Amino acid sequence: MAIIETIEPVFRFLEIITTWPVIFFIVVLLFRKEIHAIMPELAQRLKKITIGQNSAEFTDVRLKALIDAIKTTTEEYKDDPEELVYSVKDLIKKVPEVSSIAPENTASLSGSSILWVDDKPMNNVYETSILKRLGASIIFARSTEEALKFLNQDTYDLIISDILRVEEGTENHDAGYELLDELHHQKMSIPLVFYTGNITWVNSHKSKRAYAVANMPDDLIKYAVNALKIRKKS
Image 1 (cartoon, helix red, strand yellow):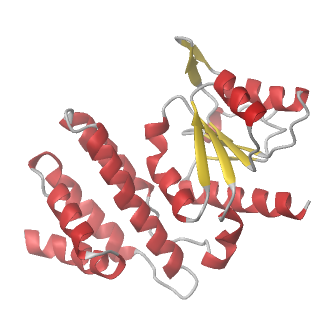
Image 2 (cartoon, rainbow, N blue to C red):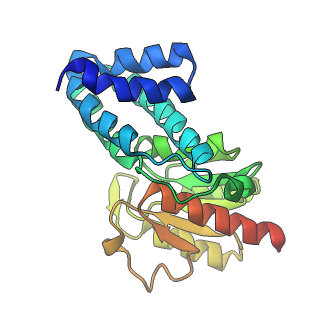
C-alpha cells in the first residue's frame, strides 16, 4: 500500500475532529521512523469507525482522547523508542471501531470527582483522557495507603482501581480487594469499579462488593456513568 493510500483516511478523519496544529503534530508523530509501521493499523481502525447519530459525539471524544494519550506517551517515553512503539500500538488497539455509548448518557460524568488507584497510571492515559474530556476530575493514588489518605481528606464520587499492585516493593495480587474491604470496614459507601487487564483473573468472591469489573475502555465508561447516575439519585 502506498503511503498516500495509508494516510488519506487518517488525515481526512482527523481533519474533521481536530484543529490543524494537532493534525500536524499527529502526522509528524506517526511518521517518525520508529513508529511508521503503526500507521496502517490506525488507518484501518479509523476507516471502520461508525459515525451514526448516537455515536458521533462520543467517537469525537474518544479520538481526541487518543491524541491526548499519544502526546503524553510520547513525552513520557521520548528517550525509549522501543517502549514508545509498544505503548502507542497498545493505545491504538484500545480505540474500538464502534461505540455503543450515546453522548447523552455521559452527562453524569460532568463535574464528578474520581479517585483512580493504580501503581502504573501511564497504563491508563487513554481512559483518563476520555473521562477528563467528559468533564470528570481525577486524582491518582499509587497505593491503597495513599488512596485511603485521599479518601479521608476529600470527597469522591467514584473509585476506579486495579487489583494487582506493587506496593512497598512487593507485588500484591490482592491490593484492590484489600482496598475494597477497607472501604467496607470504614463504612465508605463510594462505588468502586475494578479495571483490570485480564478479567479472567478476577476472584468473584473477593470482588463481590465492587460495583463492577471492566477490562475495556468503553465498558469502564459505561460502568462509571451508571454508578454515578445511581449515586447522584441517592
